[in-house]
Length: 152
Image (cartoon, rainbow, N blue to C red; front, side):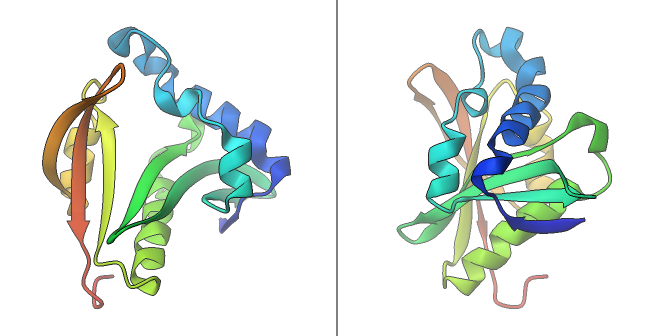
């Protein structure tokens, strides 16, 4: 597996991975989850998207960017056929390493309240719930992980 910045050519694969990863939540949320309607072309142009690829094919992606005193992890998704082999963890590690390199003391993220698996996963990875709020039509749970230089 190789992690690298996304290019314009990756946009269709990223969109397909997002659709495959998030379709299961449409009924619970009552609409397409935000990652399914994201403007990946703009995010790629901004340099905020990285992909995990195997044999030249994108199998996962992450979107993160600096935001004040934190690194904001906006989206991470793995092709459902590749879940469970460490791709998501490697992408999150990439974000945390980028935060450290940028001198950010933490990573912040959110998940939809209906994505209950994430509310177990993120605490397992060291993220602590900070608050819940409604953003537009989405009910979100926010998490933050304080980073130490020696983490990892």
